[in-house]
Length: 108
Image 1 (cartoon, one colour):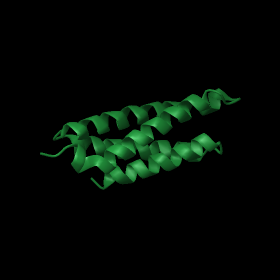
Image 2 (cartoon, rainbow, N blue to C red):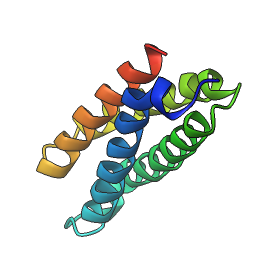
Image 3 (cartoon, helix red, strand yellow):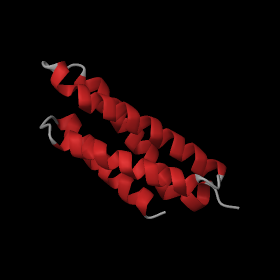
């Protein structure tokens, strides 16, 4: 049976990424030009949602864990690319967390 202990590194990366994405989305709403940050905020929220779902399915030992991790990696890469465009500290931190999460998910 696979589950938490098998996927611990990827679960940890997903949970960390989700928390940082939430922080980034929240911080982006405080930027002077919020409209310019709309795509970043949207991807942050989508990325956090898929990261939480992936962590939960891995913890449950789901037979679909690897499938959702592939989708999670795709979304993390998109979020990282968008966040990389912004020079704010929170966006740069988010870009790094998303990149690390994508790598962990791809290694599954």
